[in-house]
Image 1 (cartoon, helix red, strand yellow):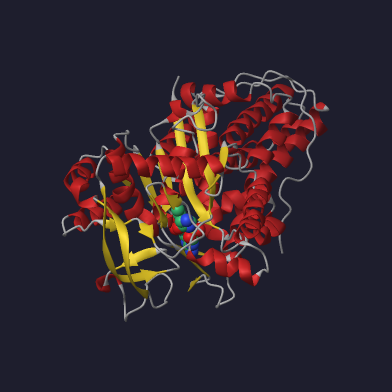
Image 2: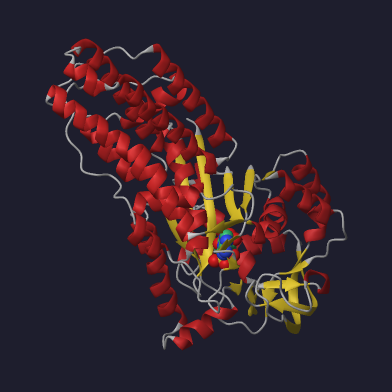
Length: 506
Ligand code: MSP
């Protein structure tokens, strides 16, 4: 059985979900649905990162204790993912007991291996990144991501022997045993690994809202170490929750999907922890870019934070997913513009795909009273579908996900042109029934293929259209048959009517 274990970062609960979180999670859901539909046994993990310096403050502002506050925000994340049709396998919270137990177990193991020692820490810390920083990482003394001045810390901490694993991690990244995508990010990490690498502090003395160290209850676990371990606790790697774990078989992780700002943690610190534990390393780490909103950095102070709810209200769930995915290439930085999204929605979904479906279905209703005899697919149509599926597969395998919709839409544009060329209304007028039947059958083959291909991106619309073909039970079989054998079949001859799929926006 082929398996696929995929993760998103776990999100800080100091804010409600915004478009940044939505971007990563939606992409993860699309990838997950693709592999699941292909018959892989899959596990999709997401969740919330609930300890840390900022949570106390945020809870106080809301007149709640930290746990109550975390419960409230974790619920908001879950609700948002539900609204967006995101179907994860597990939602891990770092305040879950089995996560806390896992963290303590991991730290004890590393401590027993003598990879943890006590020393003095003196330096800078950005509480927004929850990260220790060197002077060189700052611009004008400020954190480049948050424009805030890091705080100065001096305390006795426990340190992890990161330096011990530097050379082996360098080799594993270089030869793609841990594949970092895109290449530019891989080179960035390899470059950084050629500079001197210090051990890292992994505990804090005065931070109470955190997990205690198992070997010193005066100190708590540094939030990033706590957070990274979610990838183990989330599948119950140490048999803590289920005894024995039913999910352990998914290890190692096939894909960590993250933003570029947290690549160092995932590609260097995380593998080092796993090497110390003697556990297999993740196979791929994909770091996506950052985006701006209408050309500006998204921030609360600029009041330009986009929440997924705004997009869902405007475009509906499926179109929101499609637009988020298609806006810019996964690995690069990009820009979100509502006006461009509207244009894309009208052109691609309302006028192209949506219109093709409605036009074809209404012709079938008008000329055949919905009872159409399906003819053998024409060669030209079969060729076009083949080309489209080949590109689609390539794009999935190479994470060119922004091109997927374009690829599917090339098939629907082709079908729309086919209507113009074949002029079914003239065929009907001239009573050329056989020819008319062939054209409409070909159009149905195009629609069915495009609709199956749209499934990972727009699952609701896709299933609704497939339902009108009377066939949703065998969805996975049909998906596999299209992707692996380039074959699409229509078995029922009765097509039921559909409402408008995408209303045009003004
Ligand atoms: N809690 C850590 C992750 C721990 S994973 C073991 C964290 N959380 S976060 O909520 O701040 O960010 C989560 C993800 O959202 C990151 O991958 C980050 O890159 C992404 N984004 C947040 N704002 C973003 C943009 N403006 N653009 C693109 N992605 C952004 O980091």
